[in-house]
Amino acid sequence: MRTAIIQALRKQGYRVKNGVILMPEDPSKDDFRALNTLATQKKLEKSGPGVKPYEDRLIQYIANGHEVVPRSISPKIVPVEPESEHELLFRYACLHWSIPVSAGYGRRLRFLVIDESNGRLIGLFGLGDPVYSMQARDRWIGWDKEWKAKNLYHMMDAYVLGAVPPYSFLLGGKLIAMLVCSNEVRNAFRKKYNGQESLIRKETRPPYLVLVTTTSALGRSSIYNRVSVNGQKYWTSLGFTQGSGEFHFSNGVYDDIRAYVEEHCEPTAKHAAWGSGFRNKREVIRKCLSKIGLSADLIYHGIRREIFAAPLGRQAIPFLRGEVSRPCFYDWSASDLAELFAERWLYGRAERMPGYREYDREQYRIWPPKRTIMKGRG
Image (cartoon, rainbow, N blue to C red; front, side, top):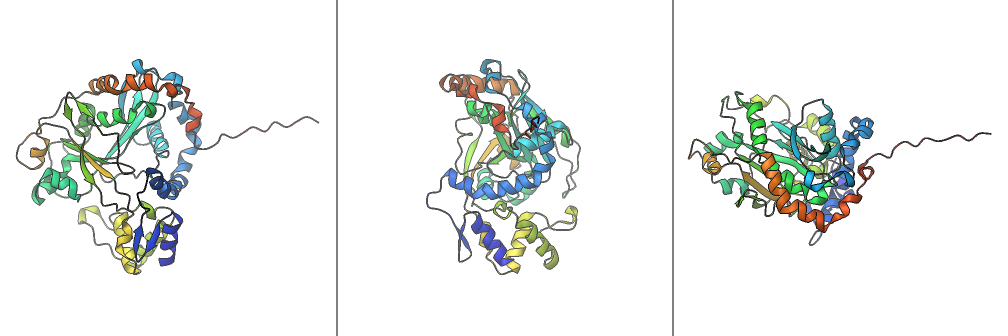
């Protein structure tokens, strides 16, 4: 098991010395992408078979460049329902990300953003439960343990967020980042969780989505820079993660780690309400590393991601600290946000960089189409 883990890390391009992963000096985003290559390939191998048979149909949601008319773009936020074609489309688009996209934790809301002018996909985002401990976020909010335990419920984390081509060439990622904070998303949260009792505290709370967080995929990110609404900046950089996680164990060795841990270890990071078994991948990996005598520091892959937070109301932070009873939500409709995006970024970008018009949706295809072999006569 020890040898398999070390070999898997080295195969991905990591240098391992004295139980610590060594990163290249001044790593670039291309270096980060290279380190993610095997994990993304494994994700494709695991998730691809369920999507591949539908690619010919799903790729029709991707626009050709000439189908995109900047002044006609009309974004619509579409909630993704389980076992629907939209869910297949969400999964298909996620397979194109340069890092493996997780399924999110706990509560989950998924959305597509469709251009109503042509029926094509602009982008997507998924919201899941935030991690419990994140020093930079918790310092920024300034809450104590009691209010954190009580009000973490009112937060969600965007575990995937972005635009697809050719909209991505027109800074569509910024549009998606804006739409995450729209009235429509808050309303979807309220509709889904209104009246539900929390799993652990057994409380029914106001269905307020008050704060959204996210982390960049590859180091620093420009998507969230200078994003403001009527002078109100709402994506704030909180610093960087410590560069830890488990994706670098997801290139084929994790299944062996899981089997080893289930045979030799007992779960401890759990609550009775969660049921039996191990809580998450990180617990599994930590248990394995400890059991076989490898350093727990191997969870530090070194890819530090920028952390961003978007309060959805004027009193969002005091609300989370328990100082006020209402967050005083901003009134940001998707249509208003789309108009602001178009005036500030879209039209200028389209004029300066018209190359998006040449995009062919076939470039988005993952699996080559089957070729029909014509047999000659004779």
